[in-house]
Image (cartoon, rainbow, N blue to C red):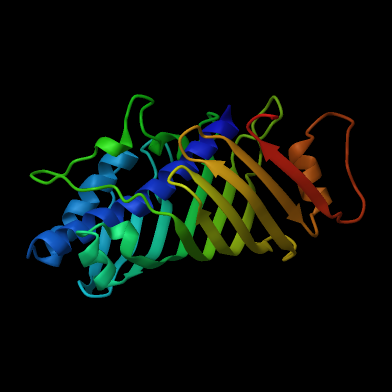
Amino acid sequence: KKIKKASKFTVLFIFAFLLCFSLAFFLFYQSKIPQNTIRYLIEFQLGKLFHQKVTVEKVSGSLLKNIVIENIHVPNHKNFKKGDVIQIGELSAEYSIFSLLTSKGDLAKGISALKVKDINVHVLRNKADLWNIFFILPEPTQKVTEKKSDGFEFPIPQFTGNIDVTNLNILYTDERGWAAEPLQKDFSEHFKSLSGLVKIIKTENLKLHLTGRLGSTNAPVNFQGILNLLKGDYDIDFTVMKLNIDTWGAYAFPFDGYTISGKSPLLKGNIRSKIP
């Protein structure tokens, strides 16, 4: 169930990415609204989407070639420690103005490149067994395709193509653990410098291939698989070239009289929502 919710978090992240460009481009294309106002509107829409007060430092670009959105911060819910659940250094879209003109301003048809870089995600489970990422998910009845900004209606882009991901860092912190009693010391692991491609095949289907490093051993890690944005289905293969067996063994198998020790193994696995 919690993995299913995590897949919905990925869906939300992808949608937020496209929503930013949809709103920013629409306002660039249709009006002469100052960029600060565009920034405030993006903050407003993302705040409704994530159920938090989202801040955006800067929106810039040229109507003729690109849009850049910088330094997005999504804070933790009040049930958690102060800090951000998501930080994004830069979102950028490059497009052809000629394609946009012939498609009557349809952003998705004119995009030549989508890029996101310097992303930090902190996945936190507190001692009350609450996960911070689940507090920013939309309500089950919320339809993200019906978003409106005050006084404007804007199109959600039906984009197909690649999203370049550079320097995605995921910090996983568990204050609770899996034993009957809470952990005396927080467990933490860092998946760092993940980079690669997210390929949107259809509006609802995507493939991902990301490689990076595991913080505790600096060993290569690899994630590759598919996601369905509408159904929340997923099938992800992962490989960790070197796992710290002492640390992970004690965390994953906290049973009396049961210990795991030995050399740091190569770990391969798969997580999926259902078996076909």
